[in-house]
Amino acid sequence: MTFRWRYPLVLSAILAAAAAPAGHCQAGAEGAWGGRAQWGDLGNGRYRNPVLPADYSDLDAIRVGDDYYAISSTFQFSPGMAILQSRDLVNWKTVGHAVPDLTQVSPELNWDRMNRYGRGVWAGAIRHHAGRYWIYFGTPEEGYFMTSAERPEGPWAPLHRMLPAAGWDDCAPFWDDDGKGYFIGTNFKDGYKIHLWEMSADNKTLIPESDRVIYQSKGSEANKLYKFNGIYYHFFSEVQGDTRVMMMRRAPSIRGPWSDKRQLMHADLAARQPNQGGIVQGPDKNWYFFTHHGDGSWEGRGASLLPVHWIDGWPVIGQPDAAGIGTMVWEGAMPALGTPRQFPQGSDEFNAGPLAPVWEWNYQPRMDKWSMSARPGFMRLHGFAGLDGGNLLKVGNVLTQRVVRGSGQSFVARLELKGMADGQHTGLAHFTAQPRSRNSAESTASAGIVMMDGQRYVEVSRDGSYTRLQPWPQDAIWLRSSWGMDGRTTLSVSADGKQFLPVLADFQLTWGAYRGSRAGLFTFNPVAEQGYVDVDAVSYVIGADPHTEIK
Image (cartoon, rainbow, N blue to C red; front, side, top):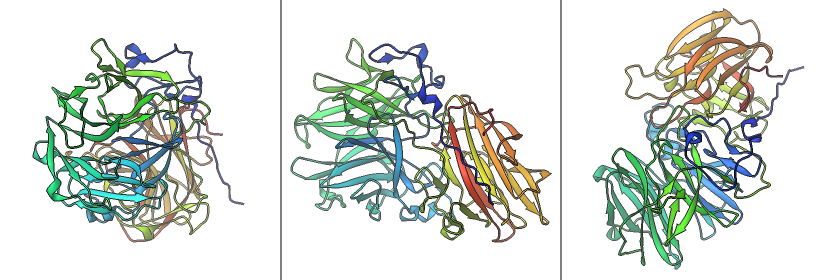
């Protein structure tokens, strides 16, 4: 009988919190970034920011009926452009991706090139129009793209390139009351000029003769267009000094004239500069801004939910001060009660047919080298050579999830090893790209198994350097990574899923190429295209003591 190990996702960091005062809690000692063991839905009718202490960058959000949908940029990870769903703006789950095949963007995003760290799918916007969902986004080399679907879970139409040019980012569509479509975006290559176009009737083409520059300032991007009470609003952010701040202009017509800019929130380095996001009305009829924090740490750019106060027709973000400019808010009342606590990342037993949307590959994977059907209930990964020896940043078919900054996490995988071949490596890795480093494998670490001369051995790596440890006669192995609020992880191995032996300690998770660290599963074989491993299950425990035994 095959032993099947199963362990559910735990969100203990969200389940309990001390009582908090009514209203919103502003920044202060409690507001020091990275020091909050409790976050998200506190379980007492309140929430604490960041609601998603993980890498959910370049957010946009909309409301459709009683549901909220958000998108987050994915850079070189595939499938691209993550789609999240919520009922209360605090508890989110991943429901899909808009770009199933990154080679629609560029062959440089394929497993045989892997040449887009820090680039690929950047910020975009999601909208619901004419009974369909629409997503528009930019890539810094390839230009602007769009796709649409009847349901946010997909299937999404093949990508259509609207502007085949480098140097553009942070775009958004807008449809007026008469159904006429418009499109806004920043040309960062040309001094951050913000352009506005009309779109064709099918919403796929920018009309060249309609192009005009409507604004320009230092770093002006993060564009959104809204219409509230008959007034047109242009939301954007810009750089003042060394800090990014959120701004807005308004006009009686989409063609202007546009007012002077209004600052919506104070610059806040301590809060890591919230700036990119979407304005929505909550289920409690109040207004909110769902945003990322734009200054990265090892967990990436986390997401917060900030209240919006309408003052003199302007949506001030955060808690207004005496001058009517918003300040950071760390805690508030839940916009709605009764929603199950949930998080976009989690455990997987690989029992479903398609790969669960909590996963993303590092680059577009080699499709003939992984399978969910070869052995039902398992994810099979086949060995083949990477592009740069044992450099994990250049190994195809690395299956990943975002790391979380909480009081204690453990990411545990059970792998069956009978199918391994000589020369094959497999394991659990953490990695962050450091494209300017002299060592292209810097900020990578792994623990796993290597097979040599018919024997399996425990193996660890750090920054591309591999060390072989003791023999491993067992046909299965549990691999665990454990980290806490400081982002220092310990990699351990186990023969039974209960007693774990640390094999690589004190690896500091890092930020790089605009992304936080990732946890991933890999296999490669530089000797020959042979061998496979079967991933039985993954337990992603969030917010628990990482040093307790898994039972």
